[in-house]
Image (cartoon, rainbow, N blue to C red; front, side, top):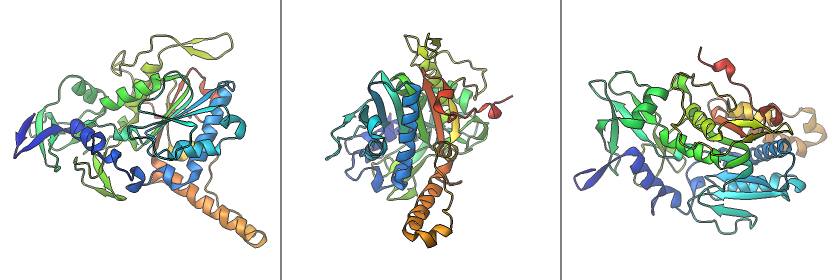
Length: 382
């Protein structure tokens, strides 16, 4: 590390880590994420209802175990996990062990049934759900210099940038595999290896069930030319400045995360009851065992789909209520109209509906989830 003008130059990964999660970091602030931006969780209780239905599908796929886990990654102030518990049928709620995973302190007044942890518990039987978590796992940023060489972008606390050393080692391998940069000056990429490793670790915590990541996303066939690094403050997009005053986020290469999660799940054996069982010694190194020549979408179990398709598969519809209801039951019509509006926001093209959903089953067959795990074979590279 070097110093210039009394301020330290850091890679974006280290700078964002301190700005988001340090002692005075953005995610330590008392107002929480909801004070600065609106996620699907905050947009409508319909989102939590859909997640609760997904948890019920997982419950059925697992044969209704005596204890069913729901793990809310990056739980914020506990909004999602609280709402999911409230939306569950009473018999399922009675068996559910709920966890909020968050670095910030446990919120005051949180439901006593929710355990608050800095890391997910191990051996989860149920659903691990990560809504807008991976986009806040800090990553390095690479930019192509005048000679066509990808270099690490360094940044100071005030947001000033300069180019550092050439990208090398595991980061260079990740770029070559998942986000190759043409030799054109100014092109940028976010090196998603830390997210792959974080997701592999999260999937590795699931003993049997389903792991889901929901985030701003892109895949190998449509990487953005200049990256996606940005900031959010008080509901508005802003220049990313790693001083703790704003969120610092970048879209997620969910296909790369899916590959890493697949290695974490490992191989499976058929049991006599027709279910599958993960072998011991799961691989949690996101780089291990990767076939460098395999297509990006060759994911035997994991599935990628849009939030729009996922929520529709979970029964969410934005259809307007019949106009006749306005005459016969005006109050019901108004409620139904409001619900349709909220569903429309959650599934809107160009908005929340374009979020990516990565679904990674562990020890349960995809068909058991009622067709939610839509095959992505049509998108495979030939």
